[in-house]
Image 1 (tube, rainbow, N blue to C red):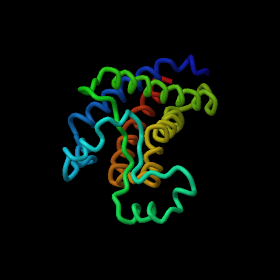
Image 2 (cartoon, helix red, strand yellow):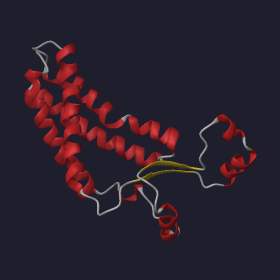
Image 3 (spheres, rainbow, N blue to C red):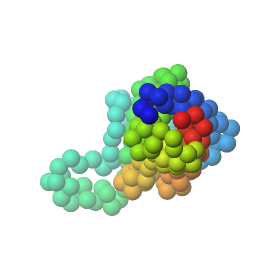
Amino acid sequence: MSIIDLWLPILVSAVIVFFASAVVWTVLKWHDSDYRKTADEEAVRAALRGAAPGMYTVPHAMTEAERKDPALKQKFIDGPQAYITVVPNGVPQMGGKLIASFVYNIFVGVLCAYFVSRMLAPDASYLQVFRMSGTVAWVAYGIAYIQESIWFGRPWIATVKSLGDALIYSLLTGGTFGWLA
């Protein structure tokens, strides 16, 4: 069995996960509480106005010498500390993000197909295919959130919810591969 032989579960799982993600984000809405409003949104907007799209840290220090500066250390103590992502101005356009999300789902399906085709015999049982592809999908959809919480302050509850999403997507992916492989 090759990855090419698994084109159908790759595409079908991508479509199923795409719609499941839409349900998670638009119907279940358990991520609505992941982001909070700042105390003075207009002051924050004014402070960030003119910042080019990109990732920023506050306070910011690039070198070891800067990190040893007592004034900078005091800024860390006084706070706030922040990791900020600035995106381009304009009304958010969902089309490109939805396409990118679907392409990502296909990529996860290809990863699953790779592992299924390399690790399992062509006559593998439903449960073997489900277990292999579901595990790979769960890792692909969820694990990176953990280091976001460890290193960048992402609230653990948001990570737990994202890991729950990943579990849903992986069960659907594993089920699809088990059914169609």
